[in-house]
Figure 1 (cartoon, rainbow, N blue to C red):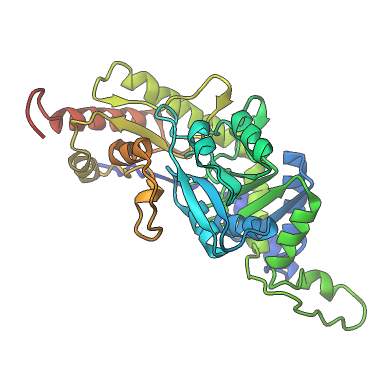
Figure 2: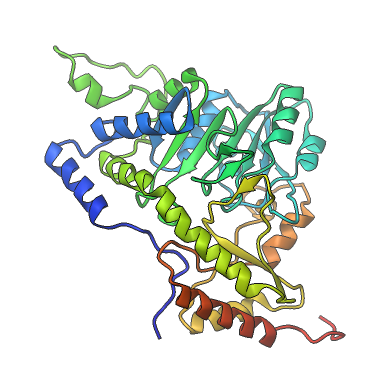
Length: 382
């Protein structure tokens, strides 16, 4: 029986043609013509002061912390239920990530939990659009404004999602995007920093190229300008090869999102009435980008056994995402019970734009059988 992968990148002839153009240009490296064109397109799409293409979303988050001047002794409140890139970014600059619990229905950061964690050492908040669903930015921005904090949107999974009619990636003063292979728009790896303030964009762009800016630009100047390294920078550039692919992908984003939405709608329809799992909840004021599709299993279901059954049938699955505060790397003191519970019970099932409806039905049948097989009978002790 054919395998049904958990993720699959929608890359084809259009993207190959764009890469061929880069090869012919003689400039495959970063911050060249294709990179500049991509940044201009992102700036226009998000109505931003600047957009900086970088190697990945983790780099964008790191650059955001540097641009905001986060330093040792500072605390940044971060959403707990997520791939822990935000917490890594805070640690990169020597500050302390403080983990905020999430809403049980959406998995997005709970504004009340954030408000309770603000203290004299708090300098900012990193919210996360959890697996493609935007957080509660109206409440989060109000908290940030009340206490004079910065707010960063980790929109890694959410390109194409919306919140109260605004697009994810434009919901905070800085947003960080990912173009990893499982995202709605991808170049395999890649990211971007979107800033309302052009000064933050300029700071990020300079630091992303070892602190000396675009070598391509310098090569266009008559004479022999020799840049000076006035501060420590990083090699976070996005290649023009990847930028060319992303130009095509952004042009296809609505098409690809529509396919993901159709898959999500069919999952919800087929799982309706299944008592042993819950499908994702999307509040009426926002839309989902469906980077992932996570079902929440009943506490009595043996998730590991379900995953074993699915993988034996060639169906990809994943635990969901992480309760970051439980990861040993951070030595966190916070307790985030909702996040910890979702970490134990969520199961990611196949979600990508290349899924057929026949494959969706096969996944649903396999999941339903597995959860019923591995559910603890009522009344039996754990």
